[in-house]
Amino acid sequence: MATSTMSPQPVPDPLSMHAASGASSSSVPPPPTAPGGTPSILEEVAAAQRHLRSRLAGALTKPPPGVAVAALPSVPLIDIGPSFDGTLESRKQVASQIREACLTTGFFQISNHGVSAAAMAGVLKQAERFFHELSEPKKQAMHIKHSALFRGYEPHDYTYVNPDDMAGAAPQQETKEGFNWGYEEALDPTGGDGAYVELDGSRPSAAGATATTTANGNVWPAEEDLPGFHAAIATYYGQVLQLARHLFRLFALSLGLDETYFDGLMTHPGGIARLLYYAAQPAVEVEVEVEDESKKGADEGEGDTDGHEEAAKLGLGAHTDYECFTLLLSSTNPGLEILFPPSAVSDNKPIWRPCPVRPGTLTVNVADFLMRWTNGLYKSTIHRVMSKPGAGERYSVPFFFSINYDGEVAPLPERSVGESLFVPLKAGEYILERLKATKLLEEREKEKP
Image (tube, rainbow, N blue to C red; front, top):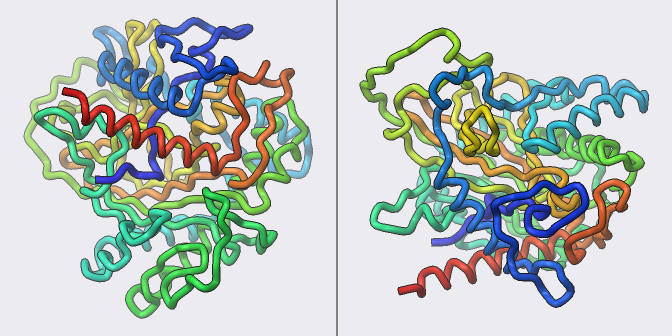
Protein backbone atom coordinates (compact mmCIF):
# COMPACT_ATOMS: atom_id res chain seq x y z
CA MET A 1 0.00 0.00 0.00
CA ALA A 2 1.11 3.56 -0.67
CA THR A 3 0.22 6.82 1.00
CA SER A 4 -1.34 9.18 -1.52
CA THR A 5 0.79 12.20 -2.26
CA MET A 6 -2.27 14.17 -3.29
CA SER A 7 -4.22 13.91 -0.05
CA PRO A 8 -1.65 14.11 2.72
CA GLN A 9 -1.84 14.01 6.48
CA PRO A 10 -3.25 16.80 8.63
CA VAL A 11 -1.20 19.37 10.52
CA PRO A 12 -2.41 21.10 13.68
CA ASP A 13 -2.44 24.85 14.06
CA PRO A 14 1.22 25.75 14.67
CA LEU A 15 0.16 28.53 17.01
CA SER A 16 -1.18 25.80 19.27
CA MET A 17 2.29 24.28 19.42
CA HIS A 18 4.20 27.38 20.48
CA ALA A 19 3.28 30.38 22.56
CA ALA A 20 2.80 33.47 20.42
CA SER A 21 1.39 36.91 20.87
CA GLY A 22 -2.38 36.80 20.46
CA ALA A 23 -2.45 33.02 20.13
CA SER A 24 -5.25 31.12 21.77
CA SER A 25 -4.60 28.14 24.02
CA SER A 26 -5.09 24.63 22.77
CA SER A 27 -5.29 21.16 24.22
CA VAL A 28 -2.74 19.94 21.67
CA PRO A 29 0.56 19.36 23.54
CA PRO A 30 3.59 21.11 22.06
CA PRO A 31 5.92 18.77 20.16
CA PRO A 32 9.65 18.68 20.81
CA THR A 33 11.55 21.26 18.82
CA ALA A 34 14.69 21.38 16.77
CA PRO A 35 17.79 23.09 18.19
CA GLY A 36 16.73 26.43 16.74
CA GLY A 37 13.47 26.36 18.70
CA THR A 38 11.31 25.49 15.68
CA PRO A 39 9.72 22.08 15.06
CA SER A 40 11.23 19.80 12.43
CA ILE A 41 9.01 18.41 9.70
CA LEU A 42 9.08 15.02 11.41
CA GLU A 43 7.91 16.61 14.65
CA GLU A 44 5.18 18.51 12.81
CA VAL A 45 3.85 15.33 11.22
CA ALA A 46 3.98 13.41 14.51
CA ALA A 47 2.05 16.19 16.22
CA ALA A 48 -0.37 16.20 13.31
CA GLN A 49 -1.28 12.55 13.70
CA ARG A 50 -1.77 12.95 17.45
CA HIS A 51 -3.98 15.96 16.78
CA LEU A 52 -6.00 14.04 14.20
CA ARG A 53 -6.57 11.14 16.57
CA SER A 54 -7.68 13.39 19.40
CA ARG A 55 -10.08 15.30 17.16
CA LEU A 56 -11.61 12.22 15.59
CA ALA A 57 -12.00 10.45 18.93
CA GLY A 58 -14.43 13.04 20.27
CA ALA A 59 -16.04 14.27 17.04
CA LEU A 60 -19.81 14.50 16.75
CA THR A 61 -21.64 13.40 13.61
CA LYS A 62 -24.95 15.05 14.45
CA PRO A 63 -26.09 18.09 16.42
CA PRO A 64 -26.28 17.90 20.21
CA PRO A 65 -29.83 17.48 21.57
CA GLY A 66 -31.89 20.62 21.20
CA VAL A 67 -29.51 22.31 18.75
CA ALA A 68 -30.96 23.22 15.35
CA VAL A 69 -28.90 22.53 12.24
CA ALA A 70 -29.19 26.19 11.29
CA ALA A 71 -27.25 27.10 14.43
CA LEU A 72 -24.26 24.92 13.48
CA PRO A 73 -21.24 26.26 11.58
CA SER A 74 -21.20 25.95 7.81
CA VAL A 75 -19.22 26.98 4.75
CA PRO A 76 -19.72 30.62 3.70
CA LEU A 77 -20.49 31.56 0.10
CA ILE A 78 -18.43 34.45 -1.29
CA ASP A 79 -19.33 36.19 -4.54
CA ILE A 80 -15.92 37.05 -6.00
CA GLY A 81 -17.40 38.61 -9.13
CA PRO A 82 -16.67 42.16 -7.92
CA SER A 83 -12.95 41.31 -7.73
CA PHE A 84 -12.86 41.23 -11.52
CA ASP A 85 -14.31 44.72 -12.02
CA GLY A 86 -10.91 46.39 -12.15
CA THR A 87 -11.08 48.41 -8.92
CA LEU A 88 -8.76 47.85 -5.98
CA GLU A 89 -11.53 48.70 -3.53
CA SER A 90 -13.72 45.88 -4.85
CA ARG A 91 -10.85 43.42 -4.62
CA LYS A 92 -10.18 44.49 -1.03
CA GLN A 93 -13.84 43.99 -0.12
CA VAL A 94 -13.77 40.44 -1.47
CA ALA A 95 -10.40 39.84 0.22
CA SER A 96 -11.85 40.83 3.59
CA GLN A 97 -14.51 38.11 3.24
CA ILE A 98 -11.83 35.58 2.34
CA ARG A 99 -9.83 36.62 5.39
CA GLU A 100 -12.80 36.05 7.70
CA ALA A 101 -13.30 32.53 6.32
CA CYS A 102 -9.58 31.70 6.58
CA LEU A 103 -9.37 32.88 10.18
CA THR A 104 -12.13 30.50 11.27
CA THR A 105 -12.27 27.23 9.32
CA GLY A 106 -10.29 27.88 6.15
CA PHE A 107 -13.19 26.70 3.97
CA PHE A 108 -15.38 28.85 1.71
CA GLN A 109 -17.23 28.54 -1.57
CA ILE A 110 -17.01 31.01 -4.43
CA SER A 111 -19.48 32.06 -7.10
CA ASN A 112 -19.00 34.21 -10.22
CA HIS A 113 -15.45 32.93 -10.35
CA GLY A 114 -14.88 33.07 -14.10
CA VAL A 115 -14.55 29.34 -14.77
CA SER A 116 -17.13 28.66 -17.46
CA ALA A 117 -20.08 26.35 -16.94
CA ALA A 118 -19.04 24.52 -20.12
CA ALA A 119 -15.54 23.89 -18.76
CA MET A 120 -16.89 22.59 -15.45
CA ALA A 121 -19.48 20.33 -17.08
CA GLY A 122 -16.89 19.16 -19.56
CA VAL A 123 -14.32 18.01 -17.03
CA LEU A 124 -16.95 16.23 -14.91
CA LYS A 125 -18.14 14.44 -18.05
CA GLN A 126 -14.57 13.33 -18.76
CA ALA A 127 -14.31 11.97 -15.24
CA GLU A 128 -17.39 9.86 -15.89
CA ARG A 129 -15.97 8.67 -19.22
CA PHE A 130 -12.56 7.81 -17.79
CA PHE A 131 -13.89 5.61 -15.00
CA HIS A 132 -16.70 3.97 -16.97
CA GLU A 133 -15.60 3.83 -20.62
CA LEU A 134 -11.87 3.18 -20.48
CA SER A 135 -11.10 -0.52 -20.27
CA GLU A 136 -9.51 -1.92 -17.13
CA PRO A 137 -6.30 -3.04 -18.93
CA LYS A 138 -5.81 0.46 -20.32
CA LYS A 139 -6.36 2.02 -16.90
CA GLN A 140 -3.92 -0.42 -15.37
CA ALA A 141 -1.33 0.51 -18.00
CA MET A 142 -1.47 4.05 -16.53
CA HIS A 143 -1.26 2.84 -12.91
CA ILE A 144 0.49 5.31 -10.61
CA LYS A 145 2.89 2.55 -9.55
CA HIS A 146 4.62 3.11 -12.89
CA SER A 147 5.14 6.82 -12.15
CA ALA A 148 7.70 8.29 -9.76
CA LEU A 149 5.39 11.31 -9.51
CA PHE A 150 2.17 9.34 -8.79
CA ARG A 151 0.68 10.45 -12.11
CA GLY A 152 -2.00 8.39 -13.83
CA TYR A 153 -4.65 5.95 -12.62
CA GLU A 154 -5.06 5.33 -8.89
CA PRO A 155 -7.17 2.29 -7.91
CA HIS A 156 -9.20 2.54 -4.73
CA ASP A 157 -7.20 -0.13 -2.91
CA TYR A 158 -3.73 1.24 -3.66
CA THR A 159 -3.60 4.36 -1.46
CA TYR A 160 -5.02 5.81 1.72
CA VAL A 161 -4.53 9.13 3.50
CA ASN A 162 -4.91 8.24 7.17
CA PRO A 163 -2.83 5.24 8.33
CA ASP A 164 -5.17 4.75 11.29
CA ASP A 165 -7.96 3.79 8.88
CA MET A 166 -6.02 0.68 7.90
CA ALA A 167 -4.98 -0.29 11.43
CA GLY A 168 -6.72 -2.63 13.83
CA ALA A 169 -8.98 -5.60 13.28
CA ALA A 170 -11.47 -3.77 11.04
CA PRO A 171 -9.54 -1.66 8.49
CA GLN A 172 -11.51 0.84 6.41
CA GLN A 173 -10.32 0.84 2.81
CA GLU A 174 -11.18 4.00 0.89
CA THR A 175 -13.61 3.60 -2.01
CA LYS A 176 -12.32 6.43 -4.22
CA GLU A 177 -10.64 5.92 -7.57
CA GLY A 178 -8.50 8.63 -9.09
CA PHE A 179 -6.65 9.96 -12.12
CA ASN A 180 -3.81 12.38 -11.37
CA TRP A 181 -1.83 14.86 -13.43
CA GLY A 182 0.36 17.90 -12.84
CA TYR A 183 1.39 21.23 -14.25
CA GLU A 184 2.83 21.47 -17.73
CA GLU A 185 3.39 24.58 -19.79
CA ALA A 186 1.08 23.34 -22.52
CA LEU A 187 -1.78 23.53 -20.02
CA ASP A 188 -0.85 27.04 -18.80
CA PRO A 189 -2.66 29.85 -20.66
CA THR A 190 0.37 32.10 -20.04
CA GLY A 191 2.67 29.61 -21.74
CA GLY A 192 4.80 29.40 -18.60
CA ASP A 193 8.28 30.83 -18.17
CA GLY A 194 10.28 27.77 -19.17
CA ALA A 195 11.55 27.26 -15.62
CA TYR A 196 9.18 24.63 -14.21
CA VAL A 197 10.75 22.06 -11.89
CA GLU A 198 9.32 19.10 -10.02
CA LEU A 199 9.21 18.61 -6.25
CA ASP A 200 12.82 17.47 -6.13
CA GLY A 201 14.07 20.35 -8.27
CA SER A 202 14.48 18.25 -11.41
CA ARG A 203 13.46 19.69 -14.76
CA PRO A 204 11.14 17.93 -17.21
CA SER A 205 13.05 16.10 -19.91
CA ALA A 206 11.82 15.70 -23.47
CA ALA A 207 13.77 12.43 -23.56
CA GLY A 208 11.13 10.89 -21.32
CA ALA A 209 8.18 11.85 -23.50
CA THR A 210 6.16 9.22 -25.40
CA ALA A 211 2.92 9.17 -27.34
CA THR A 212 0.91 9.12 -24.08
CA THR A 213 3.44 10.53 -21.57
CA THR A 214 4.51 14.17 -21.56
CA ALA A 215 7.97 15.42 -20.69
CA ASN A 216 6.95 16.24 -17.13
CA GLY A 217 5.59 12.77 -16.43
CA ASN A 218 1.87 13.22 -17.06
CA VAL A 219 0.22 10.21 -18.63
CA TRP A 220 -2.90 10.50 -20.78
CA PRO A 221 -5.32 8.07 -22.40
CA ALA A 222 -4.76 7.70 -26.11
CA GLU A 223 -6.99 10.03 -28.14
CA GLU A 224 -8.59 7.09 -29.94
CA ASP A 225 -9.58 5.55 -26.60
CA LEU A 226 -11.23 8.69 -25.19
CA PRO A 227 -11.67 11.26 -27.95
CA GLY A 228 -11.73 14.82 -26.60
CA PHE A 229 -10.57 13.82 -23.11
CA HIS A 230 -7.30 15.75 -23.11
CA ALA A 231 -8.85 18.82 -24.72
CA ALA A 232 -11.57 19.06 -22.07
CA ILE A 233 -9.03 18.56 -19.27
CA ALA A 234 -6.80 21.28 -20.74
CA THR A 235 -9.70 23.74 -21.00
CA TYR A 236 -10.72 23.33 -17.37
CA TYR A 237 -7.16 23.20 -16.04
CA GLY A 238 -6.21 26.40 -17.83
CA GLN A 239 -9.20 28.28 -16.46
CA VAL A 240 -8.83 27.05 -12.88
CA LEU A 241 -5.08 27.77 -12.94
CA GLN A 242 -5.73 31.39 -13.87
CA LEU A 243 -8.41 31.60 -11.19
CA ALA A 244 -5.93 30.27 -8.63
CA ARG A 245 -3.47 33.03 -9.54
CA HIS A 246 -6.26 35.59 -9.17
CA LEU A 247 -7.24 34.12 -5.79
CA PHE A 248 -3.67 34.25 -4.53
CA ARG A 249 -3.65 37.97 -5.22
CA LEU A 250 -6.80 38.23 -3.11
CA PHE A 251 -5.08 36.18 -0.40
CA ALA A 252 -2.24 38.72 -0.47
CA LEU A 253 -4.69 41.57 0.02
CA SER A 254 -6.41 39.63 2.80
CA LEU A 255 -3.09 39.57 4.67
CA GLY A 256 -2.56 43.29 4.27
CA LEU A 257 0.09 42.78 1.58
CA ASP A 258 0.40 44.31 -1.86
CA GLU A 259 -1.71 42.23 -4.24
CA THR A 260 1.35 41.44 -6.38
CA TYR A 261 3.30 40.09 -3.38
CA PHE A 262 3.14 36.45 -4.55
CA ASP A 263 3.30 37.09 -8.31
CA GLY A 264 6.96 36.10 -8.68
CA LEU A 265 6.19 32.74 -7.08
CA MET A 266 3.37 31.82 -9.49
CA THR A 267 5.25 31.82 -12.80
CA HIS A 268 5.57 28.00 -12.99
CA PRO A 269 3.46 26.84 -10.02
CA GLY A 270 2.90 23.38 -8.70
CA GLY A 271 -0.63 22.55 -9.79
CA ILE A 272 -1.62 18.94 -9.15
CA ALA A 273 -5.15 17.98 -10.24
CA ARG A 274 -7.21 14.84 -9.95
CA LEU A 275 -10.37 13.25 -11.27
CA LEU A 276 -12.02 11.36 -8.40
CA TYR A 277 -14.82 8.83 -8.55
CA TYR A 278 -16.88 7.55 -5.62
CA ALA A 279 -19.11 4.63 -6.55
CA ALA A 280 -22.76 4.69 -5.51
CA GLN A 281 -23.67 2.72 -2.41
CA PRO A 282 -26.84 0.59 -2.26
CA ALA A 283 -29.77 2.15 -0.44
CA VAL A 284 -30.73 0.73 2.93
CA GLU A 285 -33.94 0.88 4.90
CA VAL A 286 -33.53 3.13 7.94
CA GLU A 287 -36.25 4.50 10.14
CA VAL A 288 -35.68 8.19 10.68
CA GLU A 289 -37.49 10.28 13.23
CA VAL A 290 -37.74 13.95 12.25
CA GLU A 291 -38.35 16.09 15.32
CA ASP A 292 -39.15 19.42 13.72
CA GLU A 293 -38.41 21.72 10.81
CA SER A 294 -35.48 23.28 12.68
CA LYS A 295 -33.47 20.13 11.96
CA LYS A 296 -33.39 20.92 8.25
CA GLY A 297 -30.39 22.70 6.73
CA ALA A 298 -30.52 25.93 4.77
CA ASP A 299 -28.68 24.46 1.78
CA GLU A 300 -29.03 21.19 -0.09
CA GLY A 301 -26.71 18.61 1.40
CA GLU A 302 -26.53 20.50 4.70
CA GLY A 303 -29.46 19.02 6.58
CA ASP A 304 -29.45 16.85 9.68
CA THR A 305 -28.08 13.35 9.64
CA ASP A 306 -30.32 10.84 7.93
CA GLY A 307 -29.66 7.68 9.90
CA HIS A 308 -27.12 6.36 7.37
CA GLU A 309 -23.93 7.15 9.32
CA GLU A 310 -23.17 3.58 10.33
CA ALA A 311 -23.84 2.24 6.83
CA ALA A 312 -21.76 4.94 5.08
CA LYS A 313 -18.53 3.94 3.34
CA LEU A 314 -15.27 5.82 3.71
CA GLY A 315 -14.67 7.48 0.36
CA LEU A 316 -11.54 9.42 1.37
CA GLY A 317 -10.10 9.40 4.87
CA ALA A 318 -9.78 12.37 7.23
CA HIS A 319 -6.91 14.60 6.12
CA THR A 320 -5.77 18.07 5.19
CA ASP A 321 -4.03 19.10 1.98
CA TYR A 322 -0.32 19.88 1.60
CA GLU A 323 -0.15 22.88 -0.69
CA CYS A 324 -1.26 26.54 -0.45
CA PHE A 325 -4.95 26.01 -1.17
CA THR A 326 -7.32 23.70 -3.00
CA LEU A 327 -10.05 24.51 -5.53
CA LEU A 328 -12.67 21.75 -5.66
CA LEU A 329 -15.30 21.13 -8.30
CA SER A 330 -17.90 18.50 -7.40
CA SER A 331 -20.92 16.89 -8.96
CA THR A 332 -24.25 17.51 -7.29
CA ASN A 333 -24.24 14.47 -5.00
CA PRO A 334 -23.05 15.31 -1.47
CA GLY A 335 -20.19 13.55 0.28
CA LEU A 336 -17.57 16.07 1.41
CA GLU A 337 -17.60 16.59 5.19
CA ILE A 338 -15.67 19.17 7.22
CA LEU A 339 -14.58 18.77 10.82
CA PHE A 340 -15.47 22.11 12.37
CA PRO A 341 -13.56 23.00 15.54
CA PRO A 342 -15.12 22.77 19.01
CA SER A 343 -17.55 25.52 19.95
CA ALA A 344 -20.26 26.18 22.51
CA VAL A 345 -23.00 25.16 20.08
CA SER A 346 -21.40 21.71 19.66
CA ASP A 347 -20.81 21.13 23.39
CA ASN A 348 -17.18 22.14 22.88
CA LYS A 349 -16.55 19.12 20.68
CA PRO A 350 -15.46 18.97 17.03
CA ILE A 351 -18.37 18.25 14.72
CA TRP A 352 -18.57 16.79 11.24
CA ARG A 353 -20.76 18.84 8.92
CA PRO A 354 -21.56 18.23 5.25
CA CYS A 355 -20.26 20.79 2.79
CA PRO A 356 -23.23 22.52 1.14
CA VAL A 357 -24.07 21.54 -2.44
CA ARG A 358 -24.25 24.81 -4.38
CA PRO A 359 -24.26 24.16 -8.14
CA GLY A 360 -21.91 26.37 -10.14
CA THR A 361 -19.67 27.16 -7.19
CA LEU A 362 -16.16 26.00 -6.34
CA THR A 363 -15.08 25.05 -2.82
CA VAL A 364 -11.81 26.56 -1.60
CA ASN A 365 -9.83 25.39 1.41
CA VAL A 366 -6.57 26.55 2.93
CA ALA A 367 -3.87 23.87 2.88
CA ASP A 368 -0.96 23.14 5.19
CA PHE A 369 1.78 25.11 3.45
CA LEU A 370 -0.22 28.34 3.58
CA MET A 371 -1.23 27.69 7.20
CA ARG A 372 2.43 27.18 8.04
CA TRP A 373 3.44 30.29 6.06
CA THR A 374 0.90 32.42 7.95
CA ASN A 375 1.99 30.99 11.32
CA GLY A 376 -1.38 29.34 11.80
CA LEU A 377 -3.36 32.53 11.23
CA TYR A 378 -5.17 30.87 8.32
CA LYS A 379 -6.58 27.43 9.12
CA SER A 380 -6.07 24.15 7.29
CA THR A 381 -9.04 22.09 8.42
CA ILE A 382 -9.57 18.32 8.52
CA HIS A 383 -12.04 16.98 5.97
CA ARG A 384 -13.11 13.66 4.46
CA VAL A 385 -15.53 12.13 1.95
CA MET A 386 -18.27 9.72 3.02
CA SER A 387 -20.41 7.75 0.58
CA LYS A 388 -23.83 7.25 2.11
CA PRO A 389 -26.33 4.61 1.02
CA GLY A 390 -28.61 5.74 -1.77
CA ALA A 391 -26.70 8.98 -2.45
CA GLY A 392 -25.60 7.94 -5.93
CA GLU A 393 -22.16 8.09 -7.50
CA ARG A 394 -20.04 11.20 -7.05
CA TYR A 395 -17.32 12.86 -9.12
CA SER A 396 -14.99 15.62 -8.06
CA VAL A 397 -12.01 17.51 -9.49
CA PRO A 398 -9.65 18.91 -6.84
CA PHE A 399 -6.91 21.29 -7.99
CA PHE A 400 -4.08 21.66 -5.47
CA PHE A 401 -2.35 24.99 -6.00
CA SER A 402 1.22 25.52 -4.88
CA ILE A 403 3.75 28.24 -5.54
CA ASN A 404 6.78 27.45 -7.72
CA TYR A 405 8.34 24.33 -6.21
CA ASP A 406 11.80 25.91 -6.38
CA GLY A 407 10.68 29.30 -5.06
CA GLU A 408 12.60 30.75 -2.14
CA VAL A 409 9.99 31.17 0.59
CA ALA A 410 10.84 33.99 2.96
CA PRO A 411 8.78 34.58 6.12
CA LEU A 412 5.80 36.85 5.59
CA PRO A 413 6.04 40.32 7.14
CA GLU A 414 5.57 40.25 10.92
CA ARG A 415 2.95 42.99 10.66
CA SER A 416 0.76 40.48 8.79
CA VAL A 417 1.32 37.19 10.63
CA GLY A 418 3.66 37.84 13.56
CA GLU A 419 7.13 36.45 14.05
CA SER A 420 7.80 33.39 11.93
CA LEU A 421 7.64 30.13 13.92
CA PHE A 422 9.07 27.81 11.28
CA VAL A 423 12.27 27.42 9.30
CA PRO A 424 11.66 28.65 5.72
CA LEU A 425 11.48 25.86 3.15
CA LYS A 426 10.94 25.74 -0.58
CA ALA A 427 7.47 24.45 -1.41
CA GLY A 428 8.79 21.33 -3.14
CA GLU A 429 11.22 20.63 -0.31
CA TYR A 430 8.42 20.93 2.24
CA ILE A 431 6.20 18.42 0.44
CA LEU A 432 9.04 15.93 -0.01
CA GLU A 433 10.02 16.20 3.65
CA ARG A 434 6.39 15.71 4.68
CA LEU A 435 6.15 12.59 2.55
CA LYS A 436 9.35 11.15 4.04
CA ALA A 437 8.25 11.94 7.59
CA THR A 438 4.78 10.46 7.09
CA LYS A 439 6.27 7.25 5.71
CA LEU A 440 8.81 7.01 8.54
CA LEU A 441 6.18 7.45 11.24
CA GLU A 442 3.94 4.88 9.57
CA GLU A 443 6.80 2.35 9.59
CA ARG A 444 7.47 3.07 13.27
CA GLU A 445 3.80 2.41 14.08
CA LYS A 446 4.00 -0.96 12.33
CA GLU A 447 7.06 -1.90 14.38
CA LYS A 448 5.30 -1.34 17.70
CA PRO A 449 4.44 -4.56 19.58
